[in-house]
Image (tube, rainbow, N blue to C red; front, top):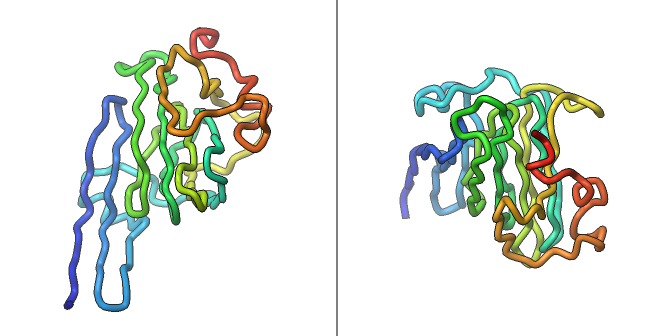
Length: 187
């Protein structure tokens, strides 16, 4: 089989500063090693990121369950460690040229999204075994920190979540997320 190297690639999105990243991967007979993050590798790809992440979280989310939309005052690097997710992002930054824009992306192992501070991040686990979702933060998360939350089921956003969500089912969406305001209520 030999060794196959897939280089890092970056694709901008309709949200200013939000980009999709396919990570560098080295594959041989034993399997694959992926670079989730390397400062110099991101710099070579033209991605401006913090040189030091302050917090890293790994969540497991059951199929159909939704988390978000949260737009804290921190940069995030997100991706799945296993399974698949459907990512949704909303530019909630007042004064941004892409304010109000929604971008949705399928997330599989090796695909990441760099989420600028103030852009809302949310996802739904879509694989039968659920997914493990990895977050890197450039600041430590603390309750009450600056930022916004938007109801991920707000019909005005037009997000077509792949698995129907019952807003009354706490196994699908938290009470906090289902009670978050519609985007139009933030202005």
